[in-house]
Length: 386
Image (cartoon, rainbow, N blue to C red):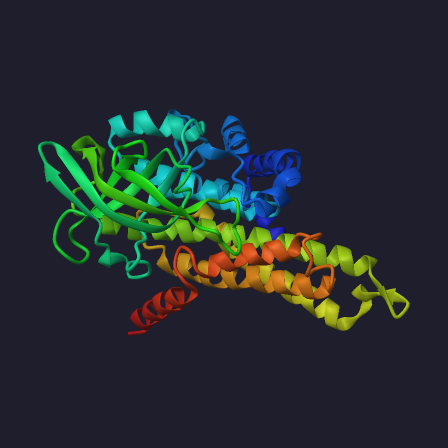
């Protein structure tokens, strides 16, 4: 049986969650998935509806209106949404994993009580602002500054490639409050209605269209000291730790894409007749199906186990980097193979596989490039066998 171990890893509650998400996706997301891509359209109304059934409450404790901190819940939700709209799944990830979860882990009670119920219900939309023109993979080199004076921090600088940047009500903003390097970076819970905050440009992207990506500018934006998230000058360590859960959960977007592409390959190859028989009977087509299926079998099992046993107090870099590296590559591979099997049809926008391939490519870049994952893994291997 395909994905037998997944069935064993999931509890009955996980299976029920998956069925509920599938119904929502089929009813609310699938009918507009093409429009989301074609018009670069962020469906704010659907995002709000996701809050009503608890999806925007993933990784938020129940006491604050969420569905709990179970990472496997997040993986299931993101994987199912990604089968129809990876871009909407990406915006949900930015909202819950990158904005709400840091507040869960590092916020004080006042911050949690104020922001988490609103994020859980999707009353407000969240995001994270870290990347800068000269600080992406080189995370410790951000230069956006936050200068403290009379109980307020004044933030000045630019942020690049910020998911939900143009639609977010609240952002976790990282800025330099001390010296250079890792020490001296702090995190703030930032209200985007603050004077001095500007969306300088909304980017027109190859894929993940409908998930707004923006360039942001801060011009002496005033933030009260009560909005400091976690300890002063320790923000670098917070965001690096956050990379672990981000890379695990974004891998579910890649597996969702690969699953949908495999489904299309099988469906089309059984229907397409060439040389008087379905092309599914040709061994070269069967090789593609077997290869993608085998990789999904292994990677989904590893993903689900990594999510189920995720411990924020332990080092999860090996699991996170391995998944991000291999799942990202698989999403692109499955997209390209789906286009190849569908032939001319796959190359048109009448079928979703070309969109899925374009969306998949983001996961080779965002949340840490493939090259950075390789370097991270190599360091860990050499450390292990020292």
